Picture (cartoon, rainbow, N blue to C red):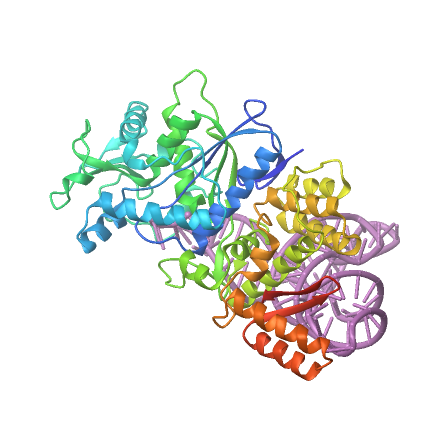
Length: 465
RNA sequence: GGCGCGAUAGCAAAGCGGUUAUGCACCGGAUUGCAAAUCCGAUUAGCCCAGUUCGACUCUGGGUCGCGCCUCCA
């Protein structure tokens, strides 16, 4: 039985879907004005893992991860680049897909773009207005009247009074209350036509929060099972989504709780500090992939629990690489392994499942993988190796040919396979002649070039360090 | 200031009221011409102070430190 840590109640809870056998899941995706960094990688990989585990558990999952393709930053960046919004977002959506694909992230069932759902957003804003929760301000913006919504703060645990006490809320506009947020932004003369939509409140564009509410309910219904995102979206974004989505259905018969399970992943940190655009301490995915194998990065992310902070450093990536190498090494010797199905009755699989069912405890599940690898190394069991590969496959790992993983990568000093094999042949010849000095010299030279030799009864194999 | 999360061995990172986490590193042994890989074994833990308990790393309270949110943010 799957348990999920639900931010709403701040505890683990048994997962019971609204419709038996089916799961509706929405995850806040990227605002596409730049390349994705490792923090984005974590959201994508973590919820990809959740998606895969739900499917492996037999659920029919409808997974939606949105794309914010209209927003202040996008407008600004497009202007800076002197390119259209569309061209800019198109470019970075393509880049995001490249990065996600590299990390083994399966495409969600839907990737709605905000600009394609403006009518739905306007509908929702109209409902909010008629429910007395939205108002048109003097400056032309349409705002959400936070104080009119009962229960604002139930997700983030913040009371309006607490928020008030904080001195960082902006007070510079025409909002009735500093905590009110924008649903519809009035168009400015300086802005391109591309960012203006007609509405009953005049030309304008949607606020950020309404996007997710509208796309979520359009694609998953007014109520759905799981909503995910980075921990930083808890407030105000997700709090506002609840206010919007529940506020819009306030007067409907079958109204109910917008989302049953809220999941938030922890941050990626650099030197114990959150990785973010504004701090400038971020590494883009493609930057990291130049140095590390994408599967190593995926392994690195999944090796920590999704709610824990994850410190990024080369040392930790190197460590992850070493660990993943051990897993692939175990797969190497029993010979060619079919990518078969998991035998869930087998003890390791049962432990793996128990770990995953406990709020997606991937570190624990991985420990099981390592213990299974140890058994495979000991027994050379082909069935064990197949099981290892199948189990790891549930996490989107270990699916490549071990040789490809072990011999891939960037180290190697420019030596190609033929050159390496030639050196290995030369060493074998030297060994035959008992010329161990020569043999060791060759091995040493290769090692310095990043090539590690491994002798066995079956012959000599190599891998990249 | 308000709210929340965390503190585990050299590093990373989990579970668990009493019995091995796991990976990397390190030490001993097996194996090897020597290595590497692999196997076997050992060593290294639970921020501090109280309390609950027969027994606490695990529960409770207090403290200290770190991080996050309260502003766009994954």
